[in-house]
Image (tube, rainbow over all chains, first blue to last red; front, side, top):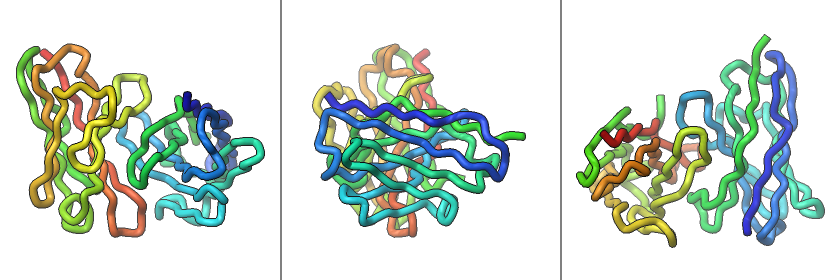
Length: 118
Length: 111
């Protein structure tokens, strides 16, 4: 059974940093593209970033480019999202997602809430 | 403002059929087959219910169907049930600098 468990969310001041983690199990993590998708409170879904199975290829939404860094540790079956220079508009539930095929998010974690506020 | 346009809300009575539209451009919905739909119940995780414009993953009831015409995709739910009350999001591959774009979501109310 595929399981994705996010952690690391919390309250952070504007300009601060936070690192999210997503522990994966139930599939071959090291050969799978992984994604982060976020959802602001009461708002819609927004794709944030993706990373290839070997970590060599990463892509970011324009809104986070240069501030967020996606990475992975295949030995630990864990996905990360390092978030720097956080802004109020980054406040959201952050989901990690596993895709079986490009462009479709087949499995989602339960999400972790990030609140950026002073 | 979301890249794909969905109605904010739709409603229907049990047993009825409803349709939710998702309008984009030739750079996303209209140009590619990579259109999908997600169902999200309040406080829950999104669930993929349609991929590749009209394909239902295993376990999704056949009451859910979808299609695309030009730059507009549509999700139809027939024989509405109370459990269908949820938010629905469309998504599409896009040639813009981002990977995929989502619609703003449609809240379905079963009266």
